[in-house]
Length: 107
Image (cartoon, rainbow, N blue to C red):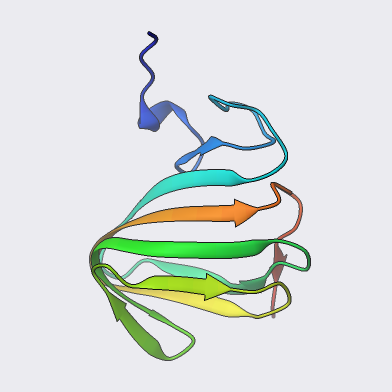
């Protein structure tokens, strides 16, 4: 058994085709992300990857719709999304496949 710390991972990403990663592989990537009230992520899309976001705790707005604890948001390739944090939030994010360069900011 080995012990790791989420704080040592980049942006909460701990499985996927990047370094550091506990399991480096290209089929999918996984993150646990912590956000604080007022945090914002730029409007963006993935051309190839599917992204699934689970709201574990908290409240956010994505594409003008509010999501709260236990909501699961499925974002297909090519669909834009933004992310506005209404209260401190924890998410689990799964993307498939793992393509670290498949994120495009929408101006």
